[in-house]
Image (tube, rainbow, N blue to C red; front, side):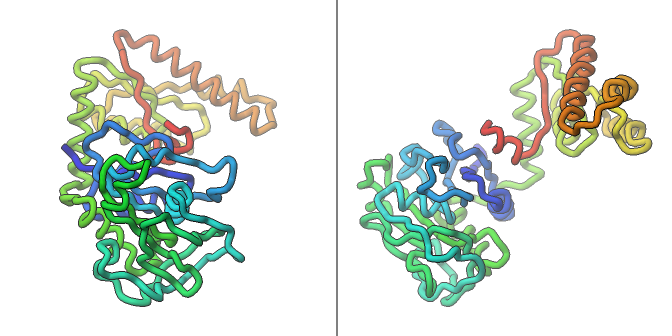
Length: 343
């Protein structure tokens, strides 16, 4: 079973960067919306809570039920994640006198704590927050401070965590108000390695190549001998999805590539050639005249967008209906789309 770290996204601009840093540690991670924690997934070995543009005091701030994983899995809160944990478990988060943004140095750091193994005193970190933690939950320990931030990092061991009403086990909690994922936190990679490898127990056996093999195997198992239809845009997302599916089910995949007339010069022809070289079974549809006719005289950008979207669906559906026996519709997308749609 492939180990994984779950990153719960609270809307931070650097959530994807956290994921990249974890993968650079040869560990698979999955970024999910803050409210989509996979409670029944035995492959999860740890949880990271991202930052957020919100304050924990905002009525619309994203909130997660910590009892889903606190105590059962090691947890690392970053910035908003750290503030949310403290606020929820009985600590105190208050608005700072001024937003702290930029470089800071850890005036004190507990190198005996496993999160800071190998750290140097006065190590540079990167802060970006408007609120600050002014008290941590009962039984928790401060493990790092800067000149301006007393609780730059805090932690709770298993014995402390097990006493929490929200806990279902005795795995520890760690939290940092700075951002270890960014370049300006000089030992940020060390901190993430300490958490992912030493604390969570990653075997560092994942790679991009192994991910492809695993994904193809999973697709074969899920789809079997069924036929699949996939809409191609000519972009990276749908093309990667098509190649993975093609490796899994071959000619049982039929792709539809619609030319709406707004591609670059010769792009439809060139991309069709590329798809053929990739061995994809692709139906190319030149519907440019229909799109141009429906857009004639339209000047409002939003109306244009709606017309293009409507026409694409109509053309795609018309072609898809010609394909008999298809049971699946595939789509290629990127992580931000999944996060923003909360799926």
